Image 1 (cartoon, rainbow over the protein chains, first blue to last red):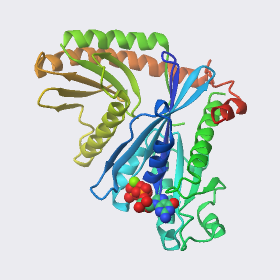
Image 2: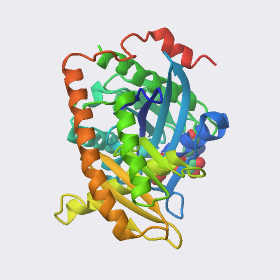
Image 3: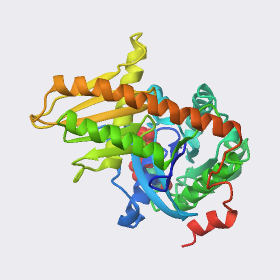
Image 4: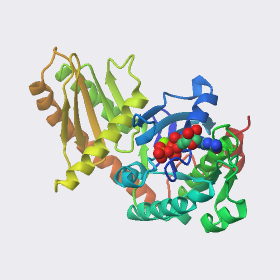
Length: 196
Length: 164
Ligand SMILES: Nc1nc2c(ncn2[C@@H]2O[C@H](COP(=O)(O)OP(=O)(O)OP(=O)(O)O)[C@@H](O)[C@H]2O)c(=O)[nH]1
Ligand SMILES: [Mg+2]
């Protein structure tokens, strides 16, 4: 849930990157962190296991610029994708303003993508949110791999809600900022709608 | 929406600053932070220089969320007070008004007993302020947003953010 602070003239929004284990959520944030001007970013925090799997969350604060004299700040979080960390995922989703679903394009990860999408839906619903009603973007990641499923197939299986979607290779950075911009835009448009 | 959006006006912020400013002195603390449960920093007081406040806010919220989850597993509603003792600095963390977290950092110029005592009093005061803020936000939401600066943003405003 966004936070409007009239005293410091800031608006803060929370974006969560969701998706199955190893799909590339942390890689998205790392790329954003590496390519962002130091004035516009805070420290990136990664609570990870020794093998660099996300244990609780990654966190990256970003400043995007001003709208009507208000500084817009986005707090990006990733969830841990491994199935057994579900309790942590629920906690990270609290107060979310927009969600990016990072799908792993490798054909053998299709089941994991579907399971994670279901899990997202369930966890959002527990908080009274519907996936169809929040700012939501799907990223088909790892398009560079030879075992990537055809795009049409991924779309048919995962994007049943007609969400904004992007192909990406988070490692090289393709599609990463496009995804971020789309979800940020969705969140800001939502603020406008909600304040009507 | 299930929760009301958090909106903080200048006058509310001043009231909160007054309470934590007093608490810093009364408790002999180094510094104090108010963080909301979603990890947003709401207010700070005392010697905050050199502290990465954005990281502090997000980690505090994460830690409170995790211990809150633990509490539920063992049948408690929440753990309202947390204390972390360091070699030099200590951290005293309490829940205020259900959605706020009060973080007090203190060293051996103070003591746990003193901090606990002063936090109790200030926490109650703060609880009242946040209740008032919450009521105001609910009333505003019911009447359709009041004077939010985001009533009037256009698609162009949003596009301009991403102009580069
Ligand atoms: N080939 C290829 N590899 C990628 C791409 N994006 C990420 N990876 C690799 O996939 C692995 C897992 O990436 P992470 O970003 O750690 O995955 P995650 O989604 O954060 O995983 P969890 O923290 O377990 O949920 C890493 O070795 C990345 O380098 C991509 O676009 N192409
Ligand atoms: Mg990760």
